[in-house]
Length: 172
Image (cartoon, rainbow, N blue to C red):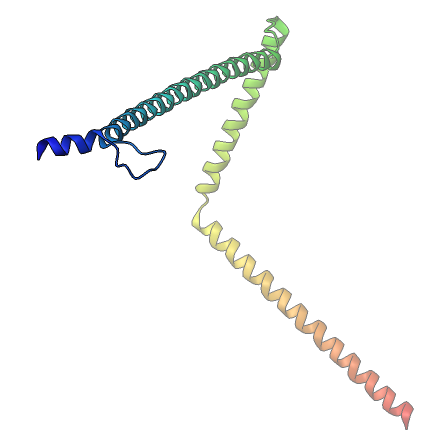
């Protein structure tokens, strides 16, 4: 039986097809196809890995460029702010007139502050009687206003009644 199986594996089927091949040839072709397939897969893996590495390098370069540009922008901003500060603050010129004016200003400021503090102290230390008197004056003034308002309304009402009566006499 073994001899017969070997012979079948080596020889073609004999069906008369042009592309007939033995089982051994078929197995060899399958092995070759599998090897070719594995080579293709390895090439694809290598290509993918190479693309991945190049992409990472590109990203790193862009990140480096961004950080470099940010650094430059920061330096420019610092330069501009220093220049603005230089432009804002005039050069310090010391003279006796300026010193005298500054002293006078400080003295006036100190006087103003003293006056404010004394004024606040007096306002806080007003006697209670004064506060009560102010309240009573306020009430009296308000009562006078209300009385004046009532009086003016009464006058207007009287005038209206007089004119109504006058009209009635004219109509009859």
